[in-house]
Length: 195
Image (tube, rainbow, N blue to C red):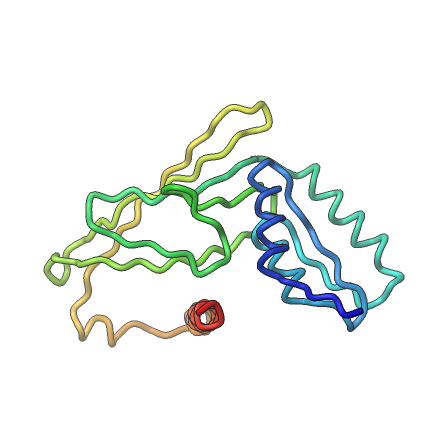
């Protein structure tokens, strides 16, 4: 008999486990697996999603995943935006927001984690002045279970139109712009599906 797979329901279960300190990594083997489901499960639970084209690589991938467990330098990581200005912040990734913090999960040494956020605010500064949007606070539990906090101030200079036009567009800027554009389109498509 046919089995219906509700990706959102399964993702909710893995998210619930994540909130209790259990991350989920997924392994897709061969060409016939539900890539969207496995990636969503990993994304919402702080895990990794692997694609294994050759079954002979399964052991290698499992060893890679287990090796990363020994590289965890922080648990229960969260990001919070603190601002005196009226700022609306939305995540363009599939990370959960609990109260006023975005849940990041585990911090693994030498593993880059790209998080995309969209900010909406009013800038009343004159052109040429610095504008402080606020702070990003990253909190996590270190290997001894002690809470650690890192703070980064978000600020930029308000540019005049001619200054903005004079900025050199590098290959890296184009890549980041494409990534941001794709994330926005993916978020919009998911919102349309959920309607």
